[in-house]
Image (cartoon, rainbow, N blue to C red; front, side):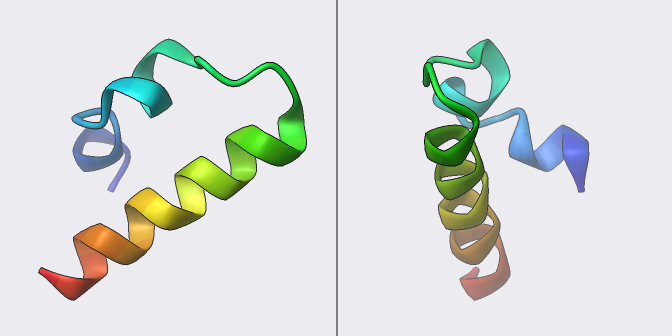
Length: 36
């Protein structure tokens, strides 16, 4: 699962500044992967 999440650039580079925003991006990426 982590290798698939790292395909998303924002997740891999930790572009977000706060932990809350980062968790939201990870959640959205997981939803996108789950929907595929």
